[in-house]
Image 1 (spheres, rainbow, N blue to C red):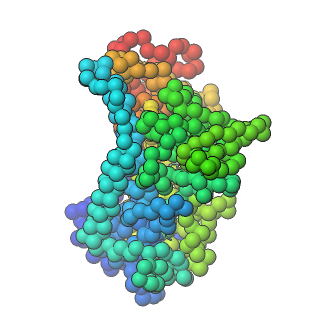
Image 2 (tube, helix red, strand yellow):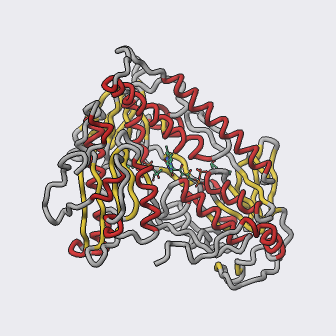
Image 3 (cartoon, rainbow, N blue to C red):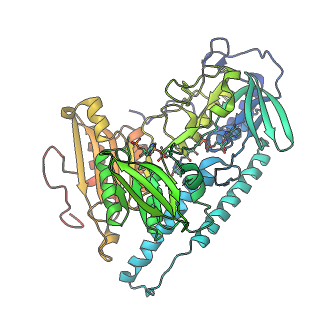
Length: 533
Ligand code: FAD
Ligand code: NA7
């Protein structure tokens, strides 16, 4: 069986010159405007209007920028609009979108800062002479993180200029199906384009409770906060809530998480409970089955947070910071989509698009605005690039949203690809599955005698034949690095047989996947016997 994508025509840079010409002559040759469907056999479309641009992208984040750069490389004339509305606290940022400014990058840097704190502690047992008074400066970390972000903002602007993508620092709204208005500092500008790409991403939600907006912050504020966060209440136990709680605790701040239903809903729940247990061992507090009721600022300057549990019992505590991580709202309402005729999915504000094409054939969408698609940077980037290749090159490959790997950067990281155990049972039935699992001991943990209780992995596979792997789950250090390669293997139809015939790299933690032998069905002890067994 060939690896995924191997049959598809790949974009050949050597052919770029030729393809640019082809793109210029047959701009949009893959779009049947009348039928409103992507159709690779359609070769010409007569342009009905005079447009300023081939493509106008609304939103200069991960997906929008990737699509814009790819489109210009294929000869299209492209403009990108990007505008950041300040948070209620007044935080704003530069070009590049969520990931670079208030998402993946500052998050990973703060996670790394927390891990280094742990490493300083561990280093003593490795012989490093570290004094007892090791301290951490929030201001120094924030400044370093912000300096890095500013440099990325700058490089992004230079890159757009070099690639001849026109960058407009303005808020885009639809005027009609072929016109977008850009509201800039200098005034209004109307941009007519043949194609539009909606890549506006989302912003954190606030709960509808007293004091939330006045006194609360979100992930949009935390990475540039002008004071140390101190004792923090984190509302929400999703990906972002747990990551923020993890790095805040690691940096030395008291952290309490209010969990409404279950942590990491949508992820494998056994893995999620292990992550929570590990965080509890590290001192993060969890208030399960609770929702916030109010936030009040006391005369002392502290924030009194009141919450209730599922028995309607009321609790409260004082905090320095309350951080809401209750999910994100796509920024579609602000776009006046009705002027263009673009519909949003019935149960929300996201756009339900088939192969990124909205119900209006020349208007596309990528990234976090898409309905029921993973909210992840590489997903937005990949979909944006592939779309531009289909629109302006000879691309035929559609985005595959299945088996996208991800990692939750909690203190002990959790990397996953493919189906959770619950989802696999739902799809295939328990009897048709084999679940391999193992606890393991990272070599690095021995000398500092770190807690190994939660170093755990799981492989979800079909039971028959070579046992096709449906999902892989890993809790431990560097989980993202461990899972990435296996994600490629899953694309190539990895089987348990293939995993077991792979020779491991010793001593690593990733090799544990090549040694799986205990199935849940067997009831055998999944704990390791020794380091090299
Ligand atoms: P965005 O990157 O959000 O870009 C949209 C841009 O459009 C923004 O700049 C916005 O201001 C602008 N805009 C909005 N409306 C308009 C308008 N009307 N006119 C002009 N401009 C407009 N993903 C990962 O893969 N790994 C991670 O580790 C990870 N960590 C994350 C941590 C946090 C705290 C958060 C919040 C997110 C994280 N993500 C992570 C998710 C990732 O950041 C998003 O999936 C990704 O940024 C989505 O890209 P996008 O292009 O859809 O939108
Ligand atoms: P998620 O993953 O949707 O998680 C949101 C969390 O907040 C989740 O635990 C929710 O509980 C909880 N929640 C939602 N609404 C409320 C209210 N009103 N009160 C209390 N708790 C609430 O969003 P994230 O922000 O963590 O991450 C979004 C994406 O960004 C993520 O997919 C990453 O890819 C990047 P629930 O489970 O609904 O009961």
